[in-house]
Image (tube, rainbow over all chains, first blue to last red; front, side, top):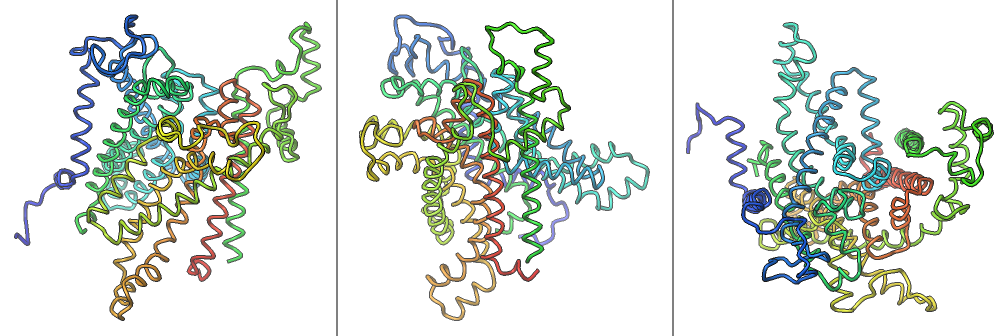
Length: 290
Length: 319
């Protein structure tokens, strides 16, 4: 055992090392990667398209030509589950990209904008964090209407407050550090401080937030679509496939039509949560102490 | 202590005012002209007549004035009339739904607290054992499954396949009221509602208790020869519960979200079902009133949580 190591590994290398030693996180990767490969590559190997109608097999059970069965108009459930994965993940990633940007900018405004901007934004964040998210999701969705773009917008508008608070705390802490003061003393402007020093030093916060938020966004999209307010048919998403189960007949007699997309949804969210938890521990230097 | 309480109440009041402003802004954003809901479409009206009506209803005034007028009415309990069920006051619709929702959420929360805290204690005391790992995986599974999916699954297994419990509603229609009937209808949705919350409480309780178990006073208690059972229950758990109380209070909003889905799957006649139905037909007065009532409820619960803290954590009184 070396007590003093002159060439110590970089923080990133140590984080990566912690991540790969975390069994749950690795399990998440092992779960997510094959799912992603299937979702992205399915038109190459699956003989069915998500909106192809097979009139000879309506409400057919799993097995035979349709591995996961078909729905009420003879569409292949496997193809729709995989296509639904594309749409659900697309909505999740797009909304997270948008909410990460908003969250970072609002956090920056609070940290660099002076006392009043800070107080105003943080009170707004308090309010946004107190209110029940699903209620506002429903209200916003009822105003903006359904559709992929408005779903992305609605989810993004609801998710940024937590991030902006974390970014604010990080930037406030950085503001007092010597290298930032030195940079400021040499005449650096706010934008330079923000994007040259603030952004690179907040990457860990952003990555962990984004990972866990993708899981949350998948759940929000599924909830909205389940109530018929998110992604509208005939496009497939995990949520709007589950919407079919609101009919008693489908729920009771054709369980494969909602069990498979439901299982895909839980697997994806579980895997991403494992990875997100792993990333959070990996970026936390204190976790080596345990 | 008086300062703490008054400060907290003042912040809460500010939040309530902000909530009404937000609701009013959202109401303005809803598509359609409010005057359309007021005039009979079969009677043609000239622009001058419409303007006169607008002036009479106060719709021509500046938005801040309209807000104050709306707020004055809202405080007196006039939240407008439902568009879908003509001339039915919104307040009556909401009051009728409050009881069932509170019953469902209260039961669900009680189950979640008992299960979550016990599982968290077991997981922390037996940390890094098979029991801990399996409980942690189950908890993450609970957090990763949306409420409507577990609701569908529970409905399918327990009422469609096993036929143990009724599939929806709060009481058997056309039967006289009995507590047993209500409990039968309540069990499944309440337990399913508690899953996500229990998982969250368990994870929090586990990490909080693990932290406390490393404290010096726990080592002191053990060194004195206190039995392990009493070390855990009297010294560790009591202190570990403090942050968990805050968590329970601050996640009420999330629990309401879950309740909306559970109510819509189980046809439970509560606020969630009212809101979902109103959203489906775009009944904006009902949507906004429900938002206002639920938001106010959450803010009040948060204030109460903070005040509870005062009772259970004596350190706050000192500072």
